[in-house]
Image (cartoon, rainbow, N blue to C red):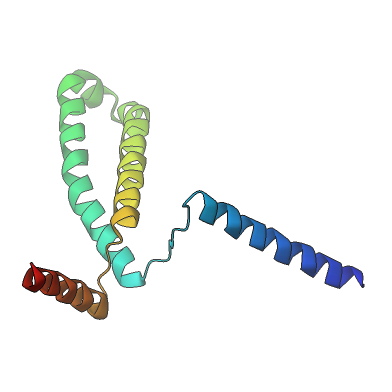
Amino acid sequence: MSPDKKEALREYEDVKIGRAIQNMYGLNVDTKQSWKSSLFEAHVNSLIGAPIAIVAHAVLLVVFMDFAVNQPLVFATTVWPLFFYLSVGRIYLFRRIFEKYGVTLEPIAIYRKIKSKLLLKKTD
């Protein structure tokens, strides 16, 4: 067997083993997201993130008013980590929520979801 074929066989076996492990532990999650769902997620994230940032900024300005007025550049550079981690935490939280609940905006997915809910109500 040539080295190329051996390497291809090893890669194939690694993929098969990885899938078996994922199936064994119930980790079979499809993380593909359409551009529409991704855009919707970004909008929701920003709509919620903007008020959080505004409130955080207002609180910081009130608490450190003298410092912010006298040293605006120093104030801005010292508080950016707070905004950075507020943003990272919010993005991470929304990413997990959207991934867990499989939010999609494709018309066919919305139609199927509504149809399945209507069929469940009829059978009850």
